[in-house]
Length: 486
Image 1 (cartoon, rainbow, N blue to C red):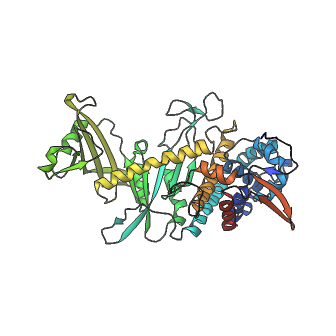
Image 2 (spheres, helix red, strand yellow):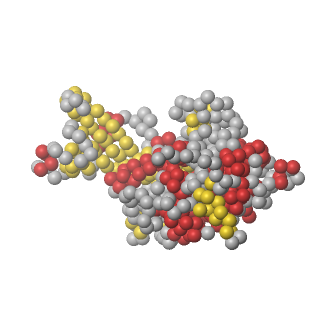
Image 3 (cartoon, rainbow, N blue to C red):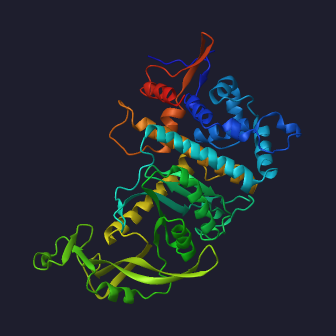
């Protein structure tokens, strides 16, 4: 039977999940927080409230877009969009761009705008506490302190993720450490859930360590309301942030860290000799016949024939300046991993063994293997970055002005956490129309099945109804999500 395409008079909206976003924005009090921003009260462009501009920007990013021109699509169904997001006025694409420029240009970003947005971001994470009564999920391994207390640590992963702005001439877009033109923002994610806690937008050429101690201090301040009794923070950073200043800040606030060390000019042979000292745990491949006769050997199913892995700890004294400006000395633990290869991939015996050395700073009392395993979990942050840059399409920012792009990037943090919150609520529901189970759902999955679910607009009993259709398997999930968050 031939299918005929017709033009209908019914209002069909491709963003049926936006009322859920609007409910979250109302719950965190976005209007009260943003409407008193000191943005040129007498300016003729000030006819639209700041909350309408910011809510529109967050909603656009929750649909997986970020361009100014999306406002034109919203204008086609502005009655639905305004009611879904609780807007007084929906800006045009031109007004939207101009007002974003004004919010950054005519306000104190560091002391006024960003603290407001960070406070809203905190409230989004706090909404998760209503669902998960125990708060954010700590790492599975508790930390046993010397006084007998048990500390449950919330992971805080910090890393830089370059945005590729090649072939553009945007303000602040310079050569990043990955050798392309772009920006280099630094993000901090907290908990096993991966909520984004803090962010700082940076020019591309800025070194990852510059201003990082101040960023860690700010992150700790924003994390404090999220920490429950018996909990602490475990910071995980890669070798680009191997600096005693970072460790000094974390220790000053009484938290913990695992930081990958930069070997710099250290000799691999010296570490190989240290690995052969007594007390170092030696792992070898599972098929090694020496395992039966040597009880000191431990099998490692991840190793191949001819590969031996040594794991141990050592201690070194470091010097730093404390918050009072006084020099301090402290002995810190280094966990090391030395991998010795004597047979290459083709089965050829090597005359000189090939060495690979990895080392980490830590102030925890976890055993060596746990420290290494916990740092490897830091790699999950690459998935968070991928979702931000691909699912939310944030890698190509829309403005040529650095300040406006900084504002949009910061608002993307709120949008990211809104989508992450919806994903966790969705994941706990029964009869979820997806195969298998997962600890979390990708941001792209939430956008595809929840936010961008199509609906037909109806009016009944003085109510605006978004009919998502009973034939859609996600209909019940979307309806339940709105009930929970309203």
